[in-house]
Amino acid sequence: MNHSKLPDTPTTIFTEMSQLALDYNAINLGQGFPDFMMSKELIELVNNAMLDGHNQYTHTDGLRLLREKLAQKAEKLYRANINPSTQITITPGGTYAIYTALTSMLKKNDEVIVFEPAYDSYIPNIIINNAKPVPVQLQYPDYSIPWDEVKNKITAKTKAIIINSPHNPTGMVLSENDIEQLKTIVANTNIIIVSDEVYEHLIFDNIAHQSILRYPELLERSFVCFSFGKTYNCTGWKIGYCISSSALMKEFRKVHQFNCFSCNSFVQYALAEFLDNEDAYLSLGNFIQHKRDYFQNLMQQTKFTPLPSHGSYFQCYSYKDFSDENDKALAIRLTKEVGVTTIPLSSFYQSKKDDKVLRFCFAKKEETLRQAAERLQNL
Ligand code: GLN
Image 1: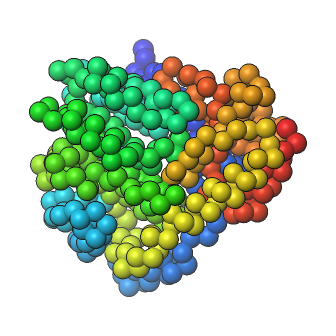
Image 2 (image 1 turned 120 degrees about the horizontal axis):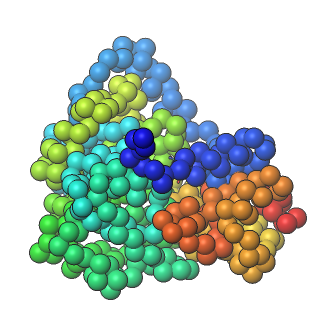
């Protein structure tokens, strides 16, 4: 008897490629995580919180002080008026927040518009809720949204649209015009928006992040998901949060309280204090942009062709000019034979569409990026 609810879902490509990198001692530019040290000040704050005795459950919605600080931050950055009691919940990471948002509202046969390439959790999250993913492909090579096609795919069953900016895996960012299009499409419907904004501060070239928090009329129908791991270079801490309307958050919390209940306490105390340091998050975009440029410069000495990246940890590179190998086969071969691990873009398409593109994570020490590029130059 087959009890699987996700019979076609493999182990996530991030785990698969990170394990392969370990097995072959390759430089891991696959899974998105920094290899440099995070803030020692934040680590000390966590240490102190534990020593101060903050080691028991916090409120299921998250530590009140942390939610207040996040509401202030949203006010300052996006002029959003957020009620910390009813509109913010602290979660064990951004991926969890997205899953909880979808699970709290999806019913059997609901349709969800998903842009592909899509972060690999979205579609299984939809399927496990007996709902139906409706993929719309972003337009290669700038991965812009074909809004006319989105319009055509909206039906009476469309329950939600998932958006993600800065975008994983491509580094595409949504413009004001994209938000206008989205507004028009959802006006006079009950469509809910799940907005994955985990790379909110990882945005380059002086582009302003088009957070849903800027648009009260959209926030009314949205779950907006964030990640402290990305903001503070500590992806292994697995802590994030969701902001939504009070009505939607009520449903979110019904699911959250019986899944995670509450996130680890000491990290929340530390984050509440560290949020006073604006520079820690406002300087991140420039810091990571420098890495994108450094790596892109080195990659000019290789046969790869860069695709645009304006945000996130990632830049995609095309290899179609020098190979017609399948992207996954190439990613595996590069790990085993060249010693550099990447993520094949086909993993982010339900159809495994292969445009001959690999995703590179450049959130690494310069030394790591230099060594990886040197290996790729010999290809
Ligand atoms: N968001 C990270 C990435 O895209 C990985 C997260 C994960 O491994 N679950 O690489």
